[in-house]
Image (cartoon, rainbow, N blue to C red; front, side, top):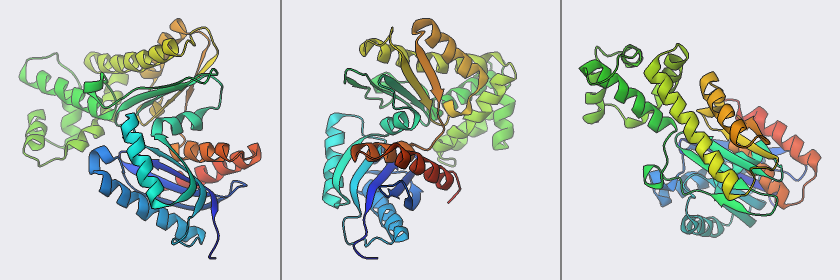
Length: 334
């Protein structure tokens, strides 16, 4: 099948996984590959592009596209770690050098989440997964983004922060510095340890990877739902942080009195935890009553593909077909 090309090469490069899809002009899914995370901030630039190149080749092979040729007309590449303009330029340069498409659009992966959730004229997205981030676009054409590189850029929340806070509270409950909390027993049960300080020791001595703290997010949410005060306080803080992103975006884009879709996504928000959702909804409704909250659990690569099809002027029917095909494939373990 030499000479075959796709209309869109869609890439969502996240912290924990990367999805690559090849889409035809009429919305058919020609090839898909999923692999490890490709955030250059975590694994390094060369390693990130090694992951991306391998997955592009894998998807092209499934599509019957010669990997020695340019596999797509437009590459829509949305990557975690594309936070500052200089990073976007650097990553764009590497994608252009790879020669994966005749045209390339590249930005932070939160823009892919935004497009997966809505195409409204005024739109904001907050992702709360491993970390937390926000982007926004107004009908006037203004585009808003935040650096979102952790505490040093004013951020709090997401899996790493929530897991760390859960352990913090449990340790202090155990040694007497903090309030009693059901998190202590829940964390011991989760890691099958006789004490919480054993978890601390395992992390300290490198016997447990720090990434396992993310496992404590569902533990925290479950304990909060059972009414534990310290756990509920953490969830309430997360709701406040999501709201503060929305408030800042609404203000900076002058959308407080405008109808605006607010897309919420990422692993933490996609749980639709009742306390978390109520906390976000109540705050947003009080501040921006014309905002419309949407919780989206579609994989961000769907949004990347839709952005690529938008760039090519594809029909609404093609976008509907692409979404359906990609959801059927990417929600199935590979």
